[in-house]
Length: 114
Length: 111
Image (cartoon, rainbow over all chains, first blue to last red; front, side, top):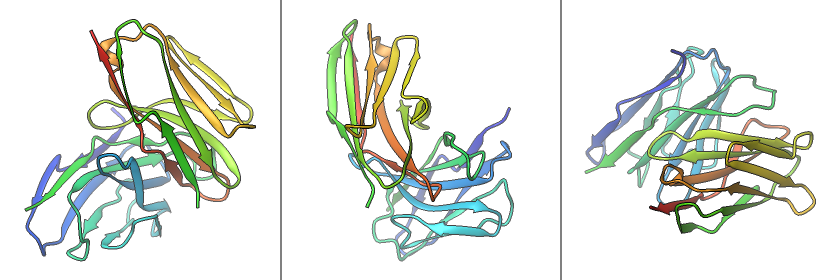
């Protein structure tokens, strides 16, 4: 089955720790995205990547880092510099970088900072 | 800065009612407007509207794009409890690969 997987489903972190959220897709999509969702605020873009070894900051990149070493993988690291990391994190991908098309979403990771 | 506003923020109706959700936008170089349904986790795609496709319909759901008013509506007729979800509107523009999302409308259908 083709799709996007995210792991873990739930993640608990102590203050001051870095954590990495996994996102993998087997849709052969070029573009991948990370969003953060807080109650009442919709989806906000953290980082996105249109091609391997290249990525751009979104609207709320501070305190986060990403890498895109493989086409199918786009991990997100939440660093200790992120002041309020508790949120629901969604990964998405899109087929053609320059084409009109929808983004497909993974099931999400809920991160809680203790 | 691109902006997408959805209204109402929440809506509670009885099963069988018809609902209309609104989305207005301010973006440079508009390319497309997308509607998603989010029940518990991953948003699922409903419709994409562009200048060449301003009206879409699938079963009880339909959507129209008004490029003059910079807005879109999502209609759901004969609502069912399975329609309860958050409905997200997003807009894409030419020049980058980003979508700007609204805050969503939380729809609750009472049996």
